[in-house]
Image (tube, rainbow, N blue to C red; front, side):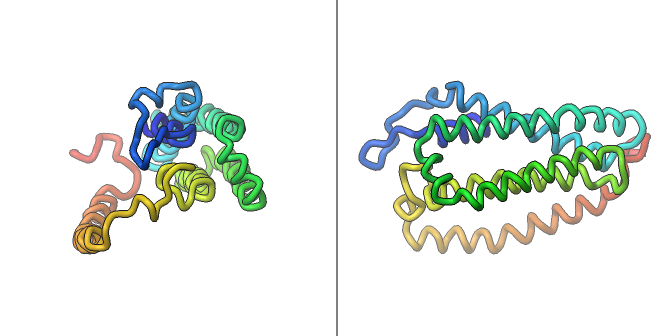
Length: 205
């Protein structure tokens, strides 16, 4: 669903007088499906990278096989999505003309990180495939940010036009200042408790 929504936003949202005039079914088109499959393949790479880091024996071997299969598929789908996006969305063409150098560097880094991930499969340290999977996602998000910023609805409505009142922002900021440290502390505690390889008999033994 994340991929469908992202693809639908890139493809274009029907807006009349600053109001949404399309349908929720607009995402069920070929390009959003391509983005959805690409995102799903990326998540498979991340999941297999996590198993590569945390598991041993049978699951570790399974993670290696999945990484060797899913990583090239993810790279091909991501590249295809970029090419198709430029052909179906004129705004993407304009972005490439204006920021071609930055986007080319991001693409080169994406390919280099993919090659490094393939090389790291089955090697020490075990964290490399997962870390490189995160790098792939970070590069994809960076490219997307360059493509759509400062729009909140790509090529339709800017962040500034859609912004709520200053009071609303202050209210959300206060909530974030209180909640974010708690979430980070809990997450850090959970990762510390379950650090290292998963025991063969599970964590409950």
